[in-house]
Length: 320
Image (cartoon, rainbow, N blue to C red; front, side, top):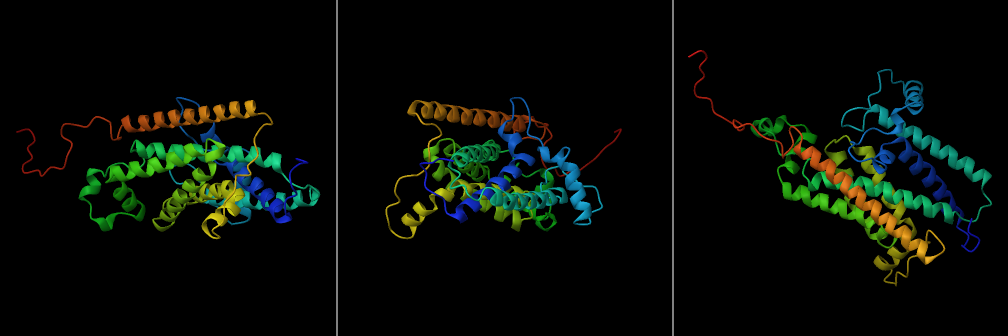
């Protein structure tokens, strides 16, 4: 506890305990921590939540609480299978329980300034890694590939909602690249404390749009996009009064109250350099992954057969 810091309101302390428990646990069991500490020449994978003991606990909750008897699936492109919904419920339940216990045993604490600034640092980079990854696979347009030949000759009514969305965005590379630039920009602005508020606002706007698209087009990333929006709100929370003064009350916003990581200016400058360097590492890492996807078989940059195209066959002959 920082003795010089003011006493937080009880509701603020309660909200921080829940945010710390919920967002922290979700980041650890999901793939967020994997994407944050990904090594070169490796591809993103599933998170620790698919391993023991979380997988066994999730399976037990699915069977005993929700009556799900079919095997839980966590592989593939969808992160909205029963496995992830049950695990999201489990994370929420544990967060509420731990917040209640924490509030009972730590009710005399005046604030969580030190814990907040370090957890905020983790949230900044966990969100930045996701935004940079999703942005780079749009700037190098691989997330939404150009419509295949089968799609181009298929009736629009034969497409699923997700297929329709994927086709419409994949058909316009400039729009896909634009959305990627916005997401990477939001992630880059999270790398420095002084630009975090602007970066979090861009991330919140971007992830809100993505969440609405996922919900209305039934895309299997609903849980993840919602969590990223919540992380953006967490980063914006200390600046809510300043934003209200600026946008609602026509008052001066005032200076940021975000505490420095260290006591000396030299240490904070070094910390800033490390944060920016790590962020540039993430850009290079996910840019290389996007390039790998682009040149992989089926990617936009992979070689195509000389016969590639849509043909009208007028005559077919076999053995003359």
